[in-house]
Image 1 (spheres, rainbow, N blue to C red):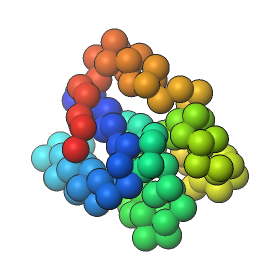
Image 2: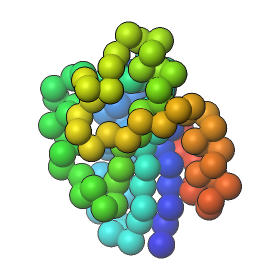
Image 3: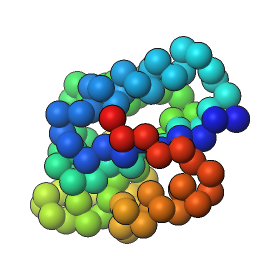
Length: 108
């Protein structure tokens, strides 16, 4: 099974990142994909178009995460996030943990 973490920290990279994931899913359903969002990209979780696109992914295969530090620095609350987004305390630590557990790091 393929395991990958997509690191998204630039708001303008949402479309490219979601496109990369769609392309990957066309080739295999045997994947476990996490999207870790921090930095300025955190505001994408407020964009209705992006939220609609997130719902198109199978939650057992693709999961979305948000950095608590990024939420705080962008004056956002957990309650503003789409319901299936998991909040992690520190995004960079989460990236390290996932790589230590065999996830390939992808930075679109």
